[in-house]
Image (cartoon, rainbow, N blue to C red; front, side, top):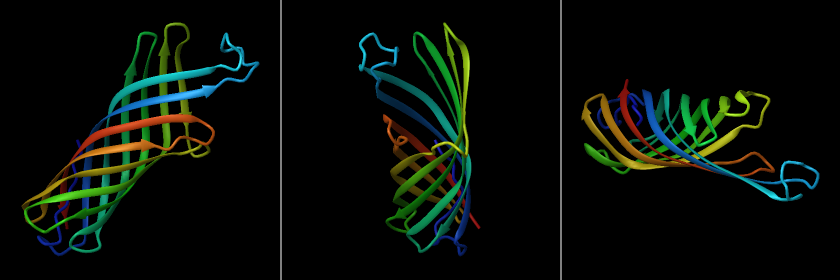
Length: 200
């Protein structure tokens, strides 16, 4: 669920708007690693190790939007996410910072109009805490010096202009994370963004 502050150019003169974001999501990851012959991690040398996990979480953040025309706009900001996952042997909690860069399109200036977005989230810093029965809690931190994860995202929904400076946007979204080079990893992230926008 995402809350964004803005309104269309048909309702006000300024091209700038600001927003606050709250967006719940569900993520599923599958990673496959080809183990080397002398790895010692697999009873079958040269075998394949596969990991599957699912998590639930949410994004919160602030955004700025600039309208190029009455139908086209671009937005960016700073988002923070928290997610949790759990299975029979372990549980994890992750925090992540990301910068979204999105291009938006609404088909008309009517009070209710289809609204589409496409772009990506650049994840630039994260912390994960993994708790297992055998090893306790392990902490992993990734920052500027690590390989960034890019999450291309698309959304399709509606925008409703309910006041001269305010609009509501509802968008189911879908994202697919681009894995680091050399890693066979697939992460899907469907979610739902609900935005309350305010335009200057």
